[in-house]
Length: 572
Image (cartoon, rainbow, N blue to C red; front, top):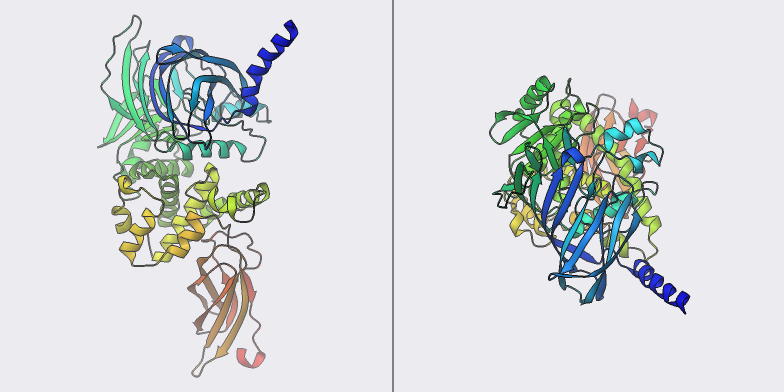
């Protein structure tokens, strides 16, 4: 009988973990009181979180996850303790590769769209940890340049989900060794939390400034013994920007209104160089009432990977300023200038601006090379999406992986980048006036941006948004089906080119006719599984036709050229 009781208790603890839907609940609001003790590398958090059941079934169990170096101390509802069990849960959304997960059993079911408020408390340390990278073979010295998050005596910088789960989250397990598994888990989180609100009150035991990816507010709290600094912040949409806090004794440089450079000892010259570049980079107009404010904060490790979140660029500030660092500045400024609840708009425009900046500084070929660097990733992601789904063709691909709902961050960024570039080519330039008329607070449905652009450009873009934004039809695959050159009276040729699209997404694509003396380009709209023809007037002997200059992502580039064999009599 004793064994049976123990077995029942054990099964009662384990069974919720087995049946649990970890992504049933969305965190709609965080109200956190965070105490940071740099000397001890310690973090202590208490506060209230509000969760909404976004599943289709009533839920009685909730998963709450924080970094494995943090421990759950208290979980309550309306001042009363609730039952919860904790265990380690392997997941690479945290730098340790493991989460401290609390499975909370609620006193009653939460119905679909119902909400619950939990008062929580947890604490522990956040040291430098590169476990998730070293266990997949990344050398430790290199891993430290990527996973540099830590609370330290002289410098503290901690990023949120995808780096360190310093605030509660809930996702299914994800592993870096399994393709884009981690990016997909983080992407699903971002999609679900685009409208979440976060209020954070920081306390620290050192007299050092506190920086956070949010809007600073007025701190109001009874100061406890040992607390030297207090700062409060409000952040909207922590699903789009990763909540990040930094505590460091910086010196400040203010080269331009709303732009500040915070630098560490020894970074003086780098700070001046970054200040000059950032002050002269204004890559895009304000979109959705974005902001021109930006803080650039120095990282102590000269080889550390840069990171951008809302209003903040973390960078080593080293000299000389590399092309990669320059693009980081462009991206950070563009991302701040754009405000949208849609990740494909916010991230896509910011990455598009990088390509547009390259085009302006180094020419279209260099910009197309930048695009091509993202094409392979996009092709691979599309292939994985098709191979992973067991549902009828079109069902999951058209919804879960559309740009509106795309759960894979890298996939979304690459595809959104191409979408904005294709729109630029389609409309004859960036739809500046349309973007100026975009208002984030009016973007209540997925088709809002389409309507804004169509109203300004007087173009019907329904087919384009259907294929590339609202549904994931995959990528096009263009081939030159036929080429018919016909000599004309007075010299020259009329060349009729037929392009076939073997893919499931349509696009307007450039067709280049190379001649004995120069080349000509015309654009042609070719829908999925269709053919379209264009006539090009050649003044000298036509030699070759090439479809797509790299501005449209497609699955196969090997069939894009066609050598023209001219009859000897015509070619003379």
